Length: 214
Figure 1 (cartoon, rainbow, N blue to C red):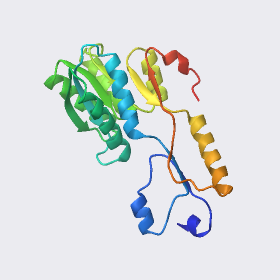
Figure 2: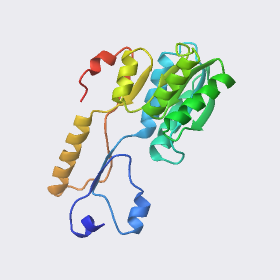
Figure 3: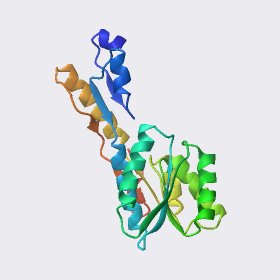
Figure 4: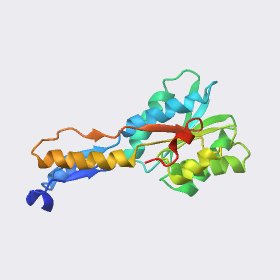
């Protein structure tokens, strides 16, 4: 708000801001650069199914209930799973972005559904925990696991043939987009719609294209 009052343009880069709460306080954003979280979930679910030729049971490990990233990614993935013949969504549980919780959820999932074929975790931390739980149960080769963010640890896991995939965007493009948006606003252009970063799926078939990813 102080920046607004001082006439300094404000651009949000990231998950987003509660615009209603901001407006109630008299504040506003001049520009937004973010990620389409619903599309993230859709893209991941669609790519997962490419590795699940026979379909089967799938589960979603969410982040924190109510968080924009978690809800969007879950909604996108659900829309794909629930509208694909031969695929059954058997569980949607919040893992709270926590590695230990995701590990326990996965352990319980494969006990309740020994024929589980896929897990979509709403970030890589939880996806990697799911992989660990599957490895401990000797089932890592039986279940396709995808995450979100393409962290360094996720990259190593995909290269090692453990994690099956993730989704990301270029930090370089993200930064350049922010600078370009700031330039346009400084020149008096009004930006009325969010700018969404292009998304890229990374999986075991294209992982070698992402060496030195920027």
